[in-house]
Length: 321
Image 1 (cartoon, one colour):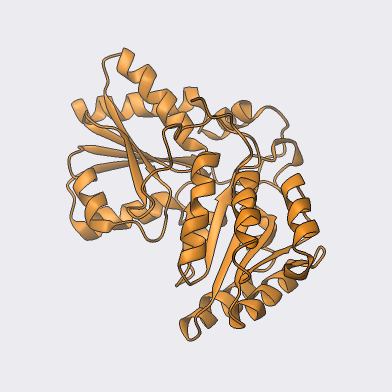
Image 2 (cartoon, helix red, strand yellow):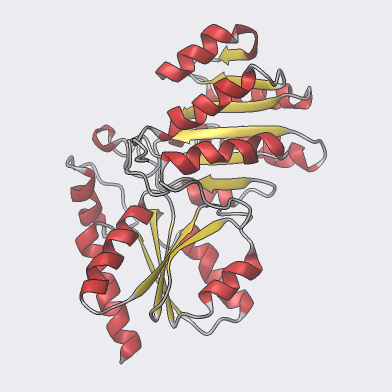
């Protein structure tokens, strides 16, 4: 059966709405943000829904207070605003407080990377992986399609601690048409073989899979790994997967070399003593104000399909040589 693509937020919100009828401990908060499914939550569960308005700092503190009273809280806002606008509150009221008190707060950030294409750098989000990874006690989950986004509900509902869910604002093609990946491991292997492994997260998994197809036709086999848990993946399992490659290329829709997924894997490879080279493919560290399609913007900053293919071909040649 073919699964029709849908927005990541709506896939998760549908799971939340369904669960709220049975689980009265689920509470939903948002910062003046909407969707059709959210309207259903507000209408059917008004006693467990709060819109704090355009006040993300208050959103975090209200959510923390509800969590301390035993609620499972889902808080929803635009990605750069639910991370950067209220970072001190996230640090103190969630990361720090969860060290001493059990709490379950799940931050849903919609608009990862360039997914708000025409809104410019104020609404685009390249820094959130770096910022949220820096906070102890936080789990950072990055979906590549709506199937994975919906599956995150089980992790959010069944485990305590603060979590950040990094969602795309656009409807992306379905990758996991046969069912969601095993979330416990934190990553999923899509392709094996070759001397190079591509480790991607979020939207960039689509680019990695496309690049792998093109490269295979050229006789260059590469592995592809979806790293969707950027904080609590199985380290031993990932080491076993990566150690078979002579080179690892990371692909992320975030700033390159500034503490994102690439920095995490550089540190991981070094700490684990893996004899592999690394290439980090990410956004050049500047803010841009040009308009265009997402693909055009990606090519401008070095993460578009053609730019990625060029980088990987050169990387493969350097390893073969």
